Image 1 (cartoon, one colour):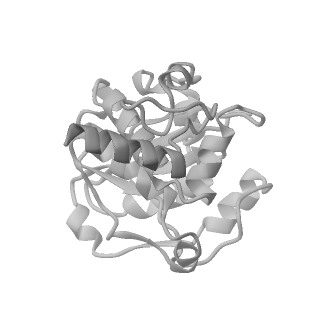
Image 2: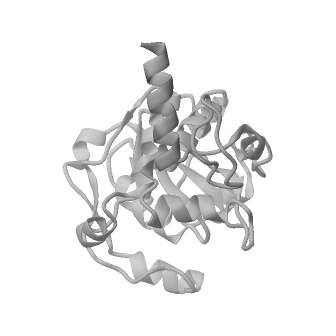
Length: 233
């Protein structure tokens, strides 16, 4: 039986090679989506232990966020760019789940994220969801939820408007673009909950701000933010 599994695994690797999403080297059995070398070399923000970090400051005076952080820094030309590109455009849902899991396990060790009840991914409009086939933020939120040992909620926050891409827009333009893009359904069910709003990349924070504003209309609701990457340049 063991030999048979080994043979099947060998054939699977030939036709569906398991390679690192960053450096393209073959993954060993225990590795998933990214090799240990690239994982350990990730430019981590370590913002999860700093309540006054640059991401948190992004929302000061704009929307009441409890805590905010991202797992790693992301800059133009970064060798980790292909990883996010594969997650968002190449159907690699598992990249979001696996990196989200690592991120969630990290957050579980931080006193700032001990009381999170649910993760909530930034939703896609149904039209974009049909085109892409999945929501990359949901993949990350799923992984983070596993790492934190909590549930993920996708039924309350929805995207009602199909907006233009935020790429190349200024912060002011981004805020205007998503100002009325989201709505809350049966929000009372989230009363008194502490929610972790999840996205793939944080740049200006405009989308997160719009989502958080809706969630914060619920009595006693608290919102924190977690993104896989922070585009700081």
